[in-house]
Length: 275
Image (cartoon, rainbow, N blue to C red):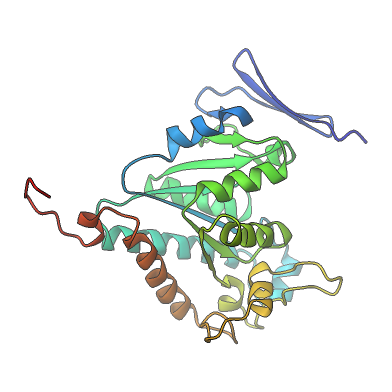
């Protein structure tokens, strides 16, 4: 089977090709950026004053069988992630009036990406998606969300993690695990691993690795193998939903405070010319 991967624009239509399957994007309201236009995409959608860029990764799909195995109801993971992200954003808005929040995601109309896109629409937030030819079939063609399509999965993951300030790791498998590790240890981003599944599961959720030694839960694996000298509240046992939300919001506030202009960070705007 051919492994052809191509992205090109012709007469205003962007075409991606993967395994001989074409996807065409011709809607003028759907801005698609090519790999060489990555900097332009970031400049157009992510740059500004007092901008905080938040990304979130996790499961793109959980079957009913997986939900049963994880001890959650079908759809519960997506609703919990949406509630969590919405709460994080509203907490920032309430704490720091004037903060300009933008969201980044993997562009797919499924799972965690769909959650982020819906929250961005609901709160009228700026957003930018990242993708590659392999995942192009999951990009909606009429939702108006700007997307930069990179040449392959590695380039997509790299651009996504490079673009953000804060990455919320909400479970996921191998790709999510690699993103989490690269974001914090290679790019020095703020990464907050949150075991959403564990917090809402009746059984404690899945282990980090499955029976085949593959990543089943990126966040569970992170906490199973990453040890610190003090006890982390996300590490051991089943943590209640409210505790997870409250602690995560505090962490995000602390991160935002040092990135915002002092007048916003400390909610004080003096009318003094020499300030």
